[in-house]
Image 1 (cartoon, rainbow, N blue to C red):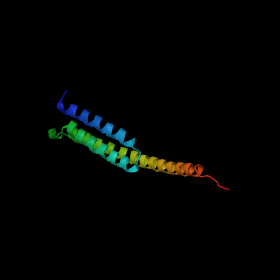
Image 2: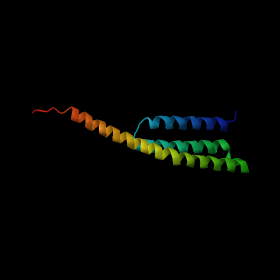
Image 3: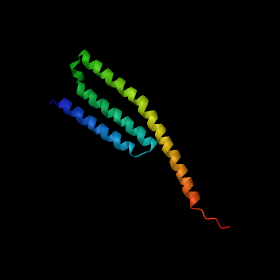
Image 4: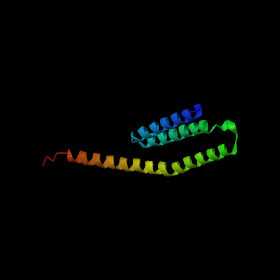
Length: 108
């Protein structure tokens, strides 16, 4: 195995780890930051893996395809994750209001 392919696999594994455990935090801001770091790490790994120093046409085509796929994924995942975080926030506020009302004692 070449050094470039090993580094690319390491970058992708690290980005998937960041991606998975950042979403577990559940906050809208952590989801956005997690997705941004995922894309940055993935693009760095792909740039390293395709070896831009070769300068051939297939490398440029692969790079454009990777950037297109990253953009396509961002158009789908970011709105869905933001909407999911928004729904979770509404659900948590609803549960907090229900729990606070059930804890109130009527003195009549």
